[in-house]
Image 1: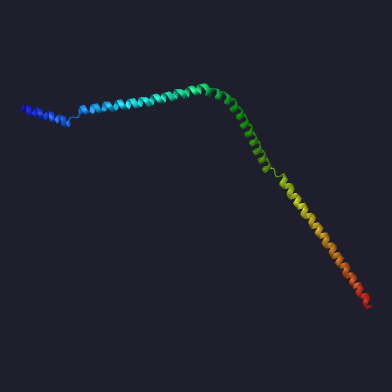
Image 2 (image 1 turned 90 degrees about the vertical axis):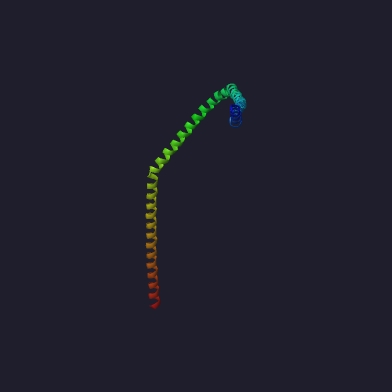
Length: 146
């Protein structure tokens, strides 16, 4: 009976105990993953080294040359900003300066007064001429009826 129990134990181990198979599969997966991962990491490290050497060889010189241009651009932008501020201040002074509006208003009043005097003179001359003509017609009528 002990042999039967041993055989049953072996059968049970073979059917339900997968430690050996799983450990082999796990080792295989780890080996595959690490080799693929190491290759990717090595490739990325080489790319980083290439980028660094390229920046070291050409990028630093370009940055030094661009620094002069950046300073020049900064000065030009500062000048443009000062001009904009000057125009803004000038616009504010023009908006607050009411002398032009006052002069225009005075000119309008003077024009209206001038036109009123002209109209009154024309009207008075017209009435005077109307009276003269009426007087003339009366004189003519009197001479005709005499």
